[in-house]
Length: 341
Image (cartoon, rainbow, N blue to C red; front, side):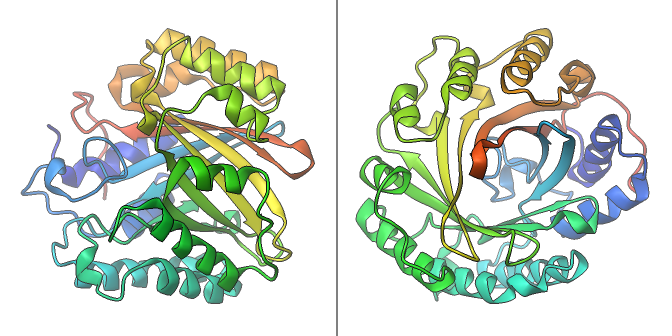
């Protein structure tokens, strides 16, 4: 396995393949968001559940009708074993990221999210308190994901935590109809998120994992997928019956008005294995169906530098669609990449 200290350099090389030319800027963003990594131990020992094998980084290629945007998602400070110290270090990186990206107006919502969704006893956070996400350009905004996977696993107690949090960050009470009540009845919340750059464009987002496998038709009936998006999801699954953990739906609400901001369905890429050529054909077909800008998946996945961790099919207000491809860097790749300095 490639030493963990090379993970940043590996990820920067994948970013270069996505057409981002400033390697030093990418390295700086990655190093700040990732934080300390203990190269003396294996990735599996890093207490990260961002990916299925302990790798604490993902790259999100977000495709719309206009552009392809790259975002970094990191599980910070995985080398810090003490949960209290890890929370303190991760939080400091979050504050700095909000400042760097001009998103300080989101500080009150972020602070409320941390206090409402995380335990007062930080020692309970054995897998880390939060994940961070940012574009490579500061004007792309910030996302922070706070874990709800601690304490009693009963869905009722976690949903109570979610609704108390939403009442603290939204200006109105969330309507108990449509997508959110459907998730309340069928899924267990696992994460709360604040995403955006300003109060006008930011959203509060709830991620929930199904208690039983979801039928795609049920998600479509609740507004998660329109007809074209349902076609794409069916093509992605290719008739496979996924486990409950294989599909992760989410609902977002605007911080400014509390209205429904959008819905997304993330599908586990490891649960729907495809060859590189199959991924390329599939993603191009999905982009064509939803009128999105395509991407060359073959070039991204060549040489085994990365694999597909998740595919997210999203819709926002006014029917705008988006396809998110979450890439996991593969530290075991034998390809030699430039150093991280």
